[in-house]
Amino acid sequence: MTMKYSRQRAAILSFLQSRRDHPTAELVYSSVKESFPNISLGTVYRNLNQLAEAGMITKHSFGTLGIDHFDYNTAPHYHFVCNCCSAVIDLPMAYSAISSIDEEASKDFDGLIREHRLYFCGTCRNCLDRESGED
Amino acid sequence: MTMKYSRQRAAILSFLQSRRDHPTAELVYSSVKESFPNISLGTVYRNLNQLAEAGMITKHSFGTLGIDHFDYNTAPHYHFVCNCCSAVIDLPMAYSAISSIDEEASKDFDGLIREHRLYFCGTCRNCLDRESGED
DNA sequence: TATAATAACAGTAATCATTACTGATTTGTC
DNA sequence: GACAAATCAGTAATGATTACTGTTATTATA
Image 1 (spheres, protein in one colour):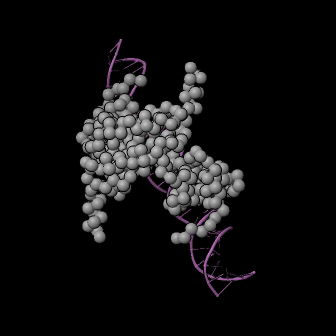
Image 2: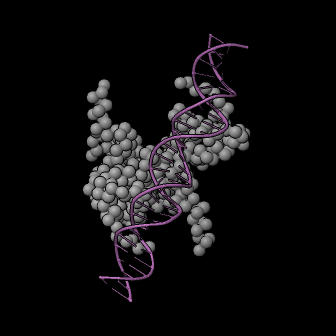
Image 3: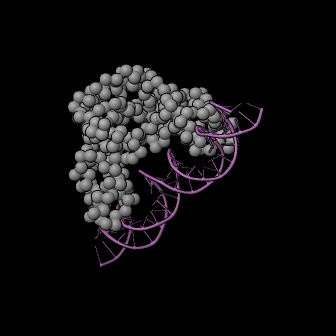
């Protein structure tokens, strides 16, 4: 099935492009709703998944959060998830820094390892400051 | 709130102990149901979470699967998730092999990194064999 | 061993993110 | 412009998990 143009999808992609954080479908929805007042949440989900499938964006599913996050940046990179405010933040750490772990993990495993999923958890700067201020 | 003994929780823990795979709540439920025919799924979830909170078991939430898995083995170790059959398999890779990545990731990040979540994806031996047999 | 306090229970309803369905509307092509 | 197909808005359904409620089991104490 070829991908036909749609104004809604263009708006969704353009919104994602404008953000450095990693919006949820709900956030995309409430933003795009400003230009398309009667867009539906299902349309947002359908288009986000379609764009992800086409490799134009990336869908991140962190286990600790129960919500998917979408990223305009499709280059492989790692993320930090704040346990406190649930923010998702890019890490500058080079992806190649641990690119060999797939081989490492394959050594004593009978099966085919295709990729790894890695992210970090802790407390972000904002929440650290807020915590220390409250004491 | 102190933890009071219950036969249901004992059965749940005992079932987990007997397994090397990483059962879901649903699987625990259907198994424990054999000895406790009218146990409810809510009871299973409540106890699994309680045991996890007490550090007696571990709850694993892999982003790519939408389902939680529970593990009697609380020692830190890595997992492989089969893209094909969704099996969760322990990896023999030493945890210490990449224990330094928390520091690595902290280098250029302004915030506190407490831990990392890492797992591997691909195709398990069973599914590899099945695939080659079907061609 | 009876009693009283309370954690845990079964059963059920609610939640939340996400997906599926449906008939109407856009979009691209001839 | 007309036709086929993708997309839409709106809504219902799904699936994993959690919350609620009145009853039962467990445990400390008398």
